[in-house]
Every structure is written in structure tokens, then in C-alpha cells.
Amino acid sequence: MSDQKKTFVVTRFDPDKDDAPRQDTYEVPVEPQWKVLDALNYIKDEIDGTLSHRWSCRMAVCGSCGMMVNGVPSLTCKDPLSNYGDRVEVAPLANFPVVRDLVVELDGFMNKLESVKPWVLTAKQRAVEEGTYRQSPAELEQFRHFSMCINCMLCYSACPVVANEPEFLGPAAIALGHRYNLDSRDEGNRERNEIFRGEGTVFSCSYANECSEVCPKHVDPAAAVNQAKFGAVIDWATSFVVPRREKE
Amino acid sequence: MARAAHPEAMKPRTPGRTRTAPPLMPDEFPTRGRYLPYVLFDATGLVYMLVGLAALRVVWDLGSGPEAWGVVQEQLRHPLYVAFHGISLVSVIFVGVRFFRLFPKAQPPKIGPIAPPPEPVITAMLYATWIGVAGVMTVILAGGIF
Image (cartoon, rainbow over all chains, first blue to last red):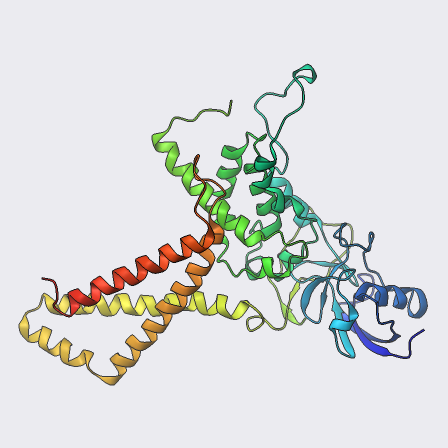
């Protein structure tokens, strides 16, 4: 074990005992190659087994271990401890209700995600004998980077609109809805654009751009939200001059 | 984190099985990272509102006769008015530069069958239009045209 030690100030909250979150401090002997998550696991395994935090893949794929590290939303399995000084503050993701310690309530996000219908919508299900839905590399390229979202919710923690307007759909949900609007196999643009023109959706975004800044997968949700604005307006305007017709 | 976010931020439609602590937001808001430009960007709305009111007042005086027009022209030379217009100019440049930086990124991959031009081209078009319109306005106000 390394001689180097760092002080971890971790936000704790026990819904059975605490009225409000508090902070506990731990001295952790750290290795140079450690990520923030390694230190949290050390605390859990060696110092205080009551600490609750979410994690799974340890390779920035599952999106489970998002937390606030020194006030910035961060994927703790990807975030090297060497980025920080001797004192590291770890807190649950901002803008989310806290279930326990570093674990946040996800159902609000799931409700919002579901509302944008993030799946391929087709007017008529294709029969198996008709073959697969085909897509060219150029068509895939239209939306590929928006499909890289791992639902880690760092963007929700960074977004000042989410913090102040509870009805706002938020960056990841809009980015995923927009991703399906750009998918050549999808026929749900009109449905989603109607949702996007509603209250608390794309036009609530004032382009702080902080969501794209913290996104660990470089999805650029701010671009998606603002492209969705454009798409929703074009869809509304063309509805007056071009008769609606389904995709062939 | 110590600042309180909206108490219902990211609240689920149906209550969870355990009591939860209310959501918090980063202490650093609104000064960290891109928060500050975001807040300043929105705050420039106040400047534009005042510019609008000042413009209405000038138009009103213009319609009230040569004497009133002379008075308002004199007032516009007051240092406070000059400072206000300096702040307005800074606000317009700040918003313009920020908007021009973000606008190319907000383009859809395709507009109908046509793909938008590359980002540097869109940016160049925006700046060229801005400089062109500002140039024409300067020539008009200097008495070069009309």
C-alpha cells in the first residue's frame, strides 16, 4: 500500500436517522493509479461498511457511479485521483433527491426518459419475412454520437435549468429523443416534435452548455437539445404548408 | 454542495419507498465553468430592455417636434448615456460572439435533403453578415446614404 494519503469528505445521509445530509471524513491511503471509485470502495471495505454508493462496470460504460467530486459531476470510475489535491469532497449527484449517502433517486429521470419515447417508432411493424431494417453507414453517422449516452445523469447534475425547473425534461432525455428523430428507421418524429414543443422541454434550455462540458462520453447533449429546437420549429412551420404524410 | 436546488427537481411521479433528502446543487453556481457566461448571457436581457425603452423615448421625442428632438440629442451626449451605450455595445458583442460560436453546433444534420455547410463556413457567414449590416448602418448614420 502506498504511503500517500488523501482526506475524503463524503456526504452521508441515512433516511432512518438523519434529518439532513451530513459530511464524514476519512483518511485513505491511495495508490497512484486509483480512480475516485477505488477510494470509495476502500472506505466501504476497510473503514466504514455502512457507506452506500452505486457502481458496477468500472470502465465508464454502465453509468452507475456518477457523483459530485469537488463540486463537479463526475464518473468516479473514470476520474483519476491524481486530478485532485489532498482533500477530495464526494457528494451525491446534484439536483436529485438523495436516497442514502451517495445514492440518488432515479425514478424521476426514468419518467422523463420514457416520456420522449426513446425507441424506434414505426407506423407498421415489418413482418419477419420482409427482412431486417437496413441502415447505411451515412445514415448511422447522423445520430451515432447521440446514441453513446450511458444515462449516467451527470448532465442533469450540471444543468442549471434542471436545478430550477422541475418540469424540464433535461439534457439526456431530449438527446435520446432527438437521436431517434434522426434515425432513418424511425417514424416517430411528429410525435416527439409535439412533445418537444410542449411545456418544460427543449425551449426551456438557455444553452448553458454545462451538460456537454461534463458528459463523459462526449455525447454533446447541448447540441442535441438545440438541434431538437430547430427540428421542432421546422416541423411546426412545415405543418402549415406541407400536408402531413407518413414516411414510406 | 450546500445550495438548495428546487425541492421538486427530478422528483419521481410516484413517491419512492424511502424518505429522501431534498436535492442540492453545486455551491459554485453561478460562478463555476460555463455557468457565469450563461448567467451573464441571460442578464443582458435587462440591458436590451433598457435600450428598447430608450429607443421608444427617442422616437417619442422625435415626434414631439424639433425642440424636443434637440433636447434629447443634447441628453444623449451626457456621460451616463454614453456609458450606457458602451455597456450596450459590450453586451451585443458578448451575446453575438457567444451565439455565433454556438449556432453552428445547433444545426440539424440535414435540412430537408441538404446538409448544412461546415461549421467554419456557417461561422464565417454569420460574421460576414454582422460586419456587413454594421457597416451599412454606420454609413447610413454617417450620412453616406440618404
